Structures are given as structure tokens and as C-alpha cells.
Amino acid sequence: MATHQAAGTGTDGTGTDGAGTAAARQRTARLRRRLAAQLVFELALPLGSYYGLRAAGTGEWPAMAVGGVLLLPWIGYGIVRQRRVEAMAVFTLSLVVVGTLLTLVTGSPRVLMIRDSWLTAAIGLWILGTLLTRRPFIMTASRGIVIAKVGEAGLVAWEAKWDAEPAFRHHLRLVSAVWGAVFLLDAVLRVVLAYTLPVDAFPLLSTVLWLVLLGALLTWHNWYLTRHGLKL
Image (cartoon, rainbow, N blue to C red; front, side, top):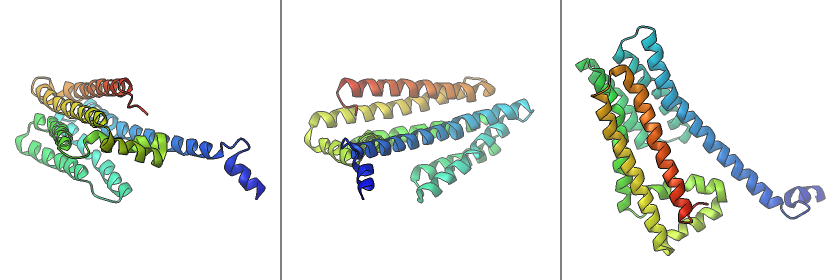
């Protein structure tokens, strides 16, 4: 019993804090692994498969279609892992199927190239639509990060600010609006690139475009939250 109590509280009374810190680190590690998996399966794998197949002599649209097909196991894994079918997963799957079929009919790889524009446009419009609700996008999207940093009790206190602090609501709505605008901007720029660039240049440059926009968005997001005292 004495050994158990020492392990639970520590000789300096910080055992509980240590356990909370360890749990927070585990949650952060899970978030990082999930992000790494997304980068591999949603960016690196489709991009690598396209240029690998092109180097092997495969045509433009079959090589591009394969990249979309490679997303299907990742989408399926997400459905199995979360044990529910999310609307975004179904929408992404529909875009892959419809884009591939339209490319078969038209014979134009550019139809497939703008597939991701529909996805980012839909996400952008959905984010902006959440501004009309009680919980804008960034409020719900940040839950996992808040829990990872301050735990469930910290999440309750953080969410309570929504009803108590008008400035808090203003900041989160503004941040959500910027996120939505950047996704819409990405959609527009992808369409422009799809119809102005050579087909073989599009996969790489569209990926670079997205990484630049996302990097700029995250940098601004971090700066804004830090400046207004919202960063945990």
C-alpha cells in the first residue's frame, strides 16, 4: 500500500501532475502521428505515385487517377478507426469516383486535376457556414489540441469563455473566417493552375501551393492567438 501511494503521489506531492503531463504527452504524440500519416497518405503517396508512373511511361490521366485510388484505403481506415461514416469522407470518396469517371468520358486529365478544388472549396464554405452557429470551426477543431495541453477540465474552462467573454467569441470567429477564406483561395488558385500549367507540372506545384498556404495560415494563426493571449 505504501509503495502504491508513493507511486501515485510522489514524495513531493507531484505524482498527479506527473501523470497528467504524461497523458498530455501521449495525446500530443497521437496528434503528431496522425498528422504524419495524413502527410504521407494524402500528399506524399499520391504525388510520388504520379511521377513514378509517369517515369515508367504511364499516361497522364491514368497516373493521376491512381493517386486518387490510393486514397481509398486511407479513407476506409479512417471510417473503421472512428467507427462512423463522416460526411467529409463520403464527399472525398465521391470526388475520387466522379472525377475518375468524368476523366474517362472526356479524356482530359485536367478534369481530374480540379477535383481537389471542389474539396477545398467545400471545406472553405463549410467553415464560413459555421460562423452562423454557436460553435465556429476553430472552436470545435481545437478541442483535441486543448485536451492534449490542459486535459478535460481545462477544456471545460476554455469552452466556458465562449459564453462569458465577447472578445473570445470575436477572436475565434475571426480566426475561423480566415481559415475558410484560405481554403477558398486554394480552390480558386488550383483551378487557375490546372488550366494554365502543363499537366505534369500541376501535381507538384499544386502541392507546393497548398503547403505554402497552409504554412502561412498556421504561422498567422499561431501569431494571432499568441498576440491576443489565446494560446494555451
